[in-house]
Length: 262
Image 1 (cartoon, rainbow, N blue to C red):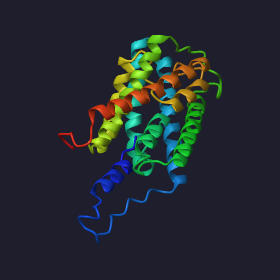
Image 2: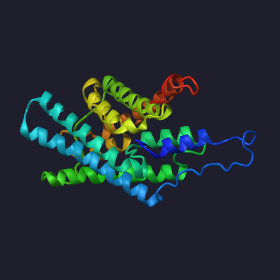
Image 3: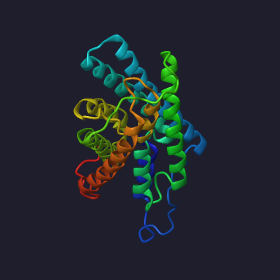
Image 4: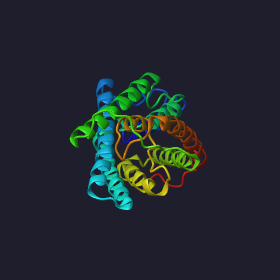
């Protein structure tokens, strides 16, 4: 969720002196990011681990209890804790997007300033995230003795569920880029994990909020799965939620009007 690199780059742009003020002062160099292969590996491993947590927790919870409330509680706690750890671990390498919606949003917002991921890096990130999500689903099934690849039969469709998915994604984008605009991305591991844990409960879709995770979970016929026929609707609403989230960021966090910077 872009825990470090985007913030430092933004600070460098802001702090760069103008020619009129200091005509001979050198501009501070932007931080050099790790090689793209390392960042892609971090996105692949991080997304794989995230899906393995979500799917594995769903299988475990379903085996331990028939109470739907307890199952949801177990899954939300496991996902929130796991996500916080993964953002902390991979944030310094790739920004820990672990989510095509976050990657696309960063590319869109940073393209005119030359910060964030480039279009090529975006393509590499998204490919790594989708591949990682599939691998994570297979790994979770393997750990619990489930068929490694089997299309889910868990239908997740209907207007209310799709609306919930759009709300979940819009809230996530608002949170991540709101933190970036106010210079508080150091709180991303706790803030993003807390939001996703809460969104499990307050959204009708249980907050996938991630196209790669959605695709990965279509390959497991377990409680965490999503039927292939429901994937397109979920991804479409996630992209719509991304647009709404960015619009809210532009509305609320207008440059020059923030009262606090953390």
